[in-house]
Length: 153
Image 1 (cartoon, one colour):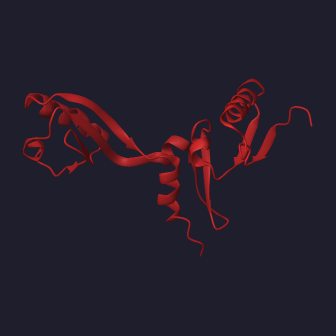
Image 2 (cartoon, rainbow, N blue to C red):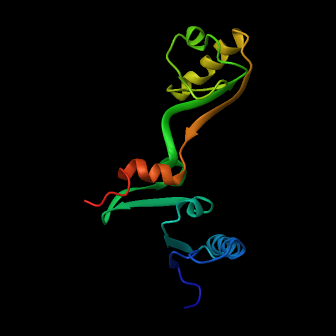
Image 3 (cartoon, one colour):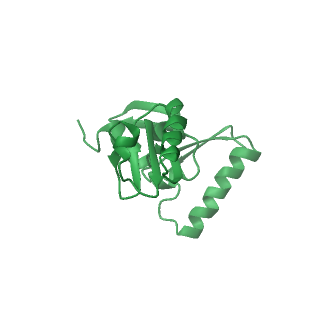
């Protein structure tokens, strides 16, 4: 078939070496962009899919759990990871509970609109703010969260 509108691939990277995977990934991207071809890929290799897919459908026991943009599927609602020079007195400064990740990073569950206020309070209290990142999951973690793991009902 020459230049189909839809190309369906089942486990296309299975058994390929890293160079073959990269070549196939580049070809898939080229077909999608230059030929404006829709490509449906069925795979269990979620880390590989995450590297080049823009939409995802999660299926559990033959039923669609979610179909969405890959970044939306991976997003953790209202969760930010903030890295500082140190976390000393962090809960007193912010007047809220935070989840400490290590000695310089913490997680806070806030709305996006609250992030500037949090950063301002930290800076006003002489904290060096290195990063503020909206928390996201890997595609694998998002899949497990949305399906409850690989449990067959």
